[in-house]
Amino acid sequence: MLLNQPEIAYQPGVALDDLQLIIDKTPRNVWNALRGQRIFITGGTGFVGCWLLEALIWANQELALNLSLTILSRNPEAFIAKAPHLAQCSIVNLIKGDVNNLQTITASFDVVIHAATDVVNPDADFVVAYNAIVEGTRETLELAKRSKAKRYLLTSSGAVYGRQPSIISHISETYAGAPDTALVNSAYGQAKRISEWLSNCYAQQFSLDVKIARCFALIGPYLPLNAHFAVGNFIRDGLSNNNITVSGDGSAYRSYLYAADMVVWLLTILINGQSGQSYNLGSDKDLTIKDLAEKVSNIIYKANKVTVATQPSANNLVQRYVPDITKAEKELGLIEYTDLTSSIQKTISWEVRNRELNLKK
Figure 1 (cartoon, rainbow, N blue to C red):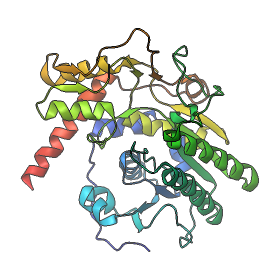
Figure 2 (figure 1 turned 60 degrees about the vertical axis):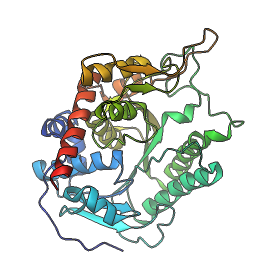
Figure 3 (figure 1 turned 90 degrees about the horizontal axis):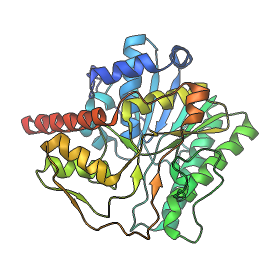
Figure 4 (figure 1 turned 90 degrees about the vertical axis):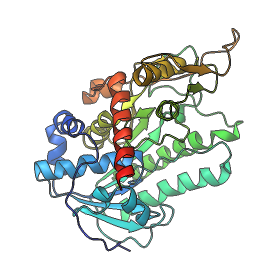
């Protein structure tokens, strides 16, 4: 059921220049296609979802889009406490519920965005986690069909490729590999892969315009600092005045796309992507985890205060998790707009500001 809540005027929770970037870099035809749309979003209270809300609420205000945003949340009260400027905005309807059980939702929607992207923790029950991810996708697809939605966006993951071969510097959508079925901890990648397959089944059977964004590593405000995200952990260490700790040998390669850029990519894929197609979403500018830690340290401390747990072994193959974004660039005109140094600085500034605001409460 809808959660009754007072309405408050929207005051952005992220930097205005980030929101302006989203307005400016998102193609005009995308905003025109979204005008007057009723949008249902899962994962709306997480990292990706909060950024989508910030952007859509701001664009609705600046471009008079007349949007209606319905957000599914297991704990609406917690979301109201976390981000009242989003949860209590006049165009936002909060629904209390679980993504694995959406049968009671009978409203009509034009767009369904399945942005629930929970990563499976190492100590999780992998079968339960797999079932939850796949069932959540099935339920959102059924909702899209039932509600007569025309468009559906699935936020998938680069994990669908399995372990990236060390000889491939940037992995593309044409790579035919997959997560190793012998590894039970590959539940997340396996589930996202099946979610993509299910989405394409619905696209063919029910004429649903399905787009898939395979998200790689991201950075920006709202990123949890205590989860399994290296850059978040490094920022946490630095802001706690501790040495920045690399738990492994730091030789793995990653790349990071800033959250404002991510929103431009997601909305462009949603409207301009080809139905049934998957697009890598991320930065192709790679660096090692050790280099990333040192970059964060230099920004916070103006010095190298990095501790690396182990030394690289000469016999170990280099681990990589870096996308080839040629398809998104050529087909959709998408590029990286915010460099990594700026991304880290913006994330740190937002975190510091939020901590200061919380201390004043």
